[in-house]
Length: 70
Image 1 (cartoon, one colour):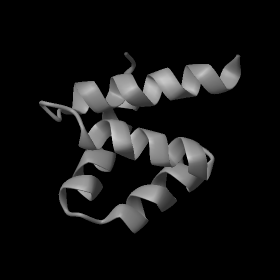
Image 2 (tube, rainbow, N blue to C red; image 1 turned 45 degrees about the vertical axis):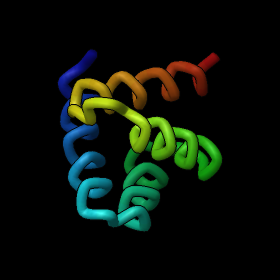
Image 3 (cartoon, rainbow, N blue to C red; image 1 turned 135 degrees about the vertical axis):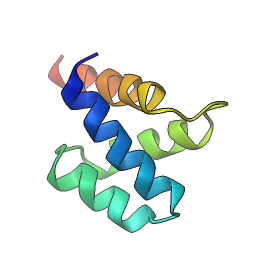
């Protein structure tokens, strides 16, 4: 997992932790270029993590970014 994904995961975690879903969506849409349906899946998966850490979020972001490239 790259340092870039870890940084983006920390930023996204901060937004989700502060219950700022609107900013989380905008962050993923503008910076990460994820479509809205993928954003919803990512936020849903993050919200169900038993231990929400930057590494766990980075894994989810990496998973969806790889899927989009296939």
